[in-house]
Amino acid sequence: MKFLLKQIQRHDAQLKALWQNGRRRAAQVLSAAERQTERWAHFPARVYFLAWAGGLFLLWLWDFFFLNAPERHLLEIAFVHSLLIAGLVVVLSFVWAWLTAYLIEFFSDRQKDVAAGLLHFALNLIRSLPQIVGVLLGYVWITYRIQTGHIRSGLGIMLWMSVFLSLFIFPEVVALLRERIAYFRQSDFFNAMRVSGISDARIINYDILWKNSRRHILNKMIAVFSSAIFLQCSVDFIVSVGLSTRVSAVNLPTTLGSLLANIDSKQDILAIGYSLTHPGYLPNLFFLHLQGISVALVIVFTLFSLYKITNALAERFRL
Image 1 (cartoon, rainbow, N blue to C red):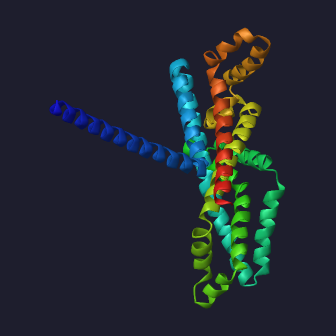
Image 2: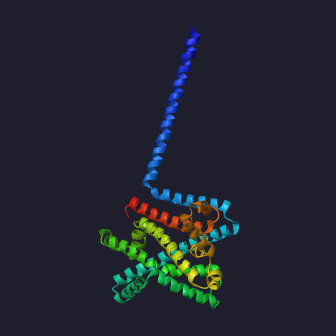
Image 3: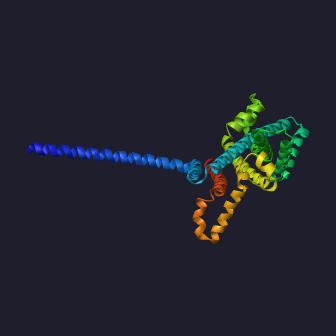
């Protein structure tokens, strides 16, 4: 009898220990989940980025099963080309903006008002011209150079497209860089570092722009990337619709904007309006009209996600 009681007590002790260990582990898991949730809540830009990547992957997976291979391949090429051009626009815009902002500060410090005034005049001249008109003029130059045989490769065409896009976007970046430099010029540390013998180039490039403006620049880079995609798609759509088939379909690389202007894509988009008056046709949109709908969805979803990411970063870091 005593042996049975000891066995029961030992089993009770083991059960209690297991129960306590289980509660402890459950509490640890919940605590980790709460910390992760709090981390995501404090940095929602990561959530929007993952949502964008996940949404595009799901769309590609759907197209993989239900969109024919040639059209899917064309959509993939257009997506890669658009991202490549937008990425080049970001790089070129910040190189030109940094050089312009630094030269303005350099000339202003040395009281070379004529040189600084010429740079201001050039920036104001670029700002006075609507972006879409300026880029269209750039495309006219590109098509002329293609016809004369000076630009032959697709990569060269995309590079020149990026050049003209960045030319009408970089003044926005110049405004940001000059605003950050002007803000720190009013503080005491700028003059203190100057008195200490530190050069203006190091103060501006390292202490102001790198150490104290990285978040602002990163947020602006995402905004420039979004603007480049929007402007590129708009101009490519106009060019593909307005120019002759020989120029737009053969000599210019395929992008999301030009693919949206494709006759098949336009018919797919028009099918949405038809389904509004004929609801029974709605399921066909997801199987028979995927190219145009996929292109439109990629453009809209990308722009929306980038907008949410920039807003999230601005709120997170109080930019």
